[in-house]
Length: 251
Image 1 (cartoon, helix red, strand yellow):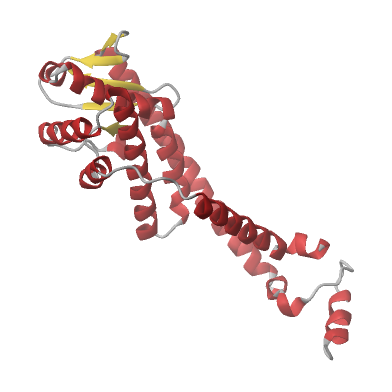
Image 2: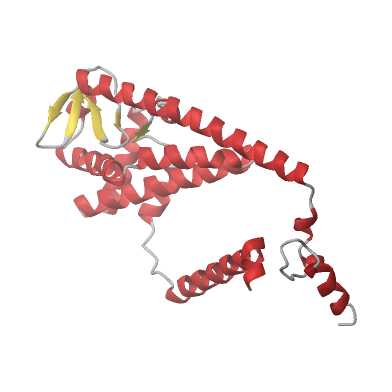
């Protein structure tokens, strides 16, 4: 408190004429060279992300166009059938995604198994998960590589679990959906490079975790945990905004 008057006189001597506690805001004393350097690095990263994003968009568009040319649409099931002796099923597309399945796999599946597979892939299409993953993978370039890989893996698992639940709602049997995932994962023994060409394959990763979720009984949502978590996020976000230079001057 004895130093309050000195600090106030120092802060009011700034050219903007706004008094603030510089001792608690050392960021304002950084040199212009550091600010310009940081902005330059940020702009370079954003330009690189934009360039990579445009290339991925073009690659995904060409790949989906090729798939639709070689595939035969099945309006009744809402899927494109591709004549092939290989086993594969996946969803592809950014703004207008579709599900694609090989004729060989379609012949091997029972009607109920086919309902599970198509419900899962169509859920990906309705949610536009390929587009979500593309944007979030580009935004995650700002993270460290290990953190980025961890976050994208969690995102992929969440997408797969949501679509597994959609398949359960379609057939009404959690155990049958789990058995179908295991059986088809054994047939689809080769993984498709999803990020490279913009597809989401049925035999994605985290098969063991997905099966465990399907075999366990759904746990009720804890309303108190949701409320206090939301309240904590709001308080934290408000605190970050209050510490930002333009805002805490007004406060």
